[in-house]
Image (tube, rainbow, N blue to C red; front, side, top):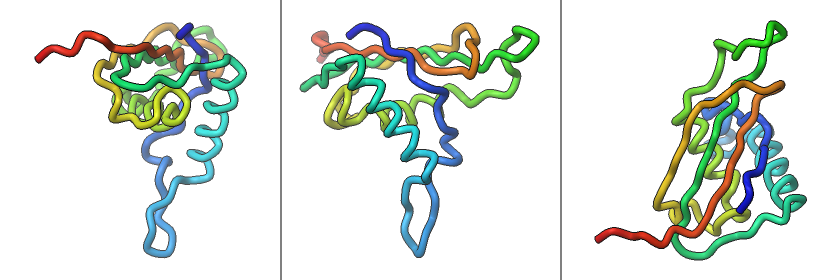
Length: 125
């Protein structure tokens, strides 16, 4: 799968909301998931069966001064939100992810994520 540029992810702290005794996704989370699915469909993303390797490059927001914003999410929180958003697009269930590569890279305007995924054939026993 060729890399896809996704929008800056929602914070894990704003992903879930409690409502009438239930835990539900926030409207912001639903918008992020919807945006990810629309972008992936436009890029003709392929949903994989079986073990998946997921690659995530997190791009902080670029400030007006051309620097990486010092205010950014934790990489680990970004990973979970991205895994959830790609469910049903890159794979049926995020439990298919058996290999994960994630890093923080150069800032871009408005921030974002570059993601790619592929079949993972090398299962070590």
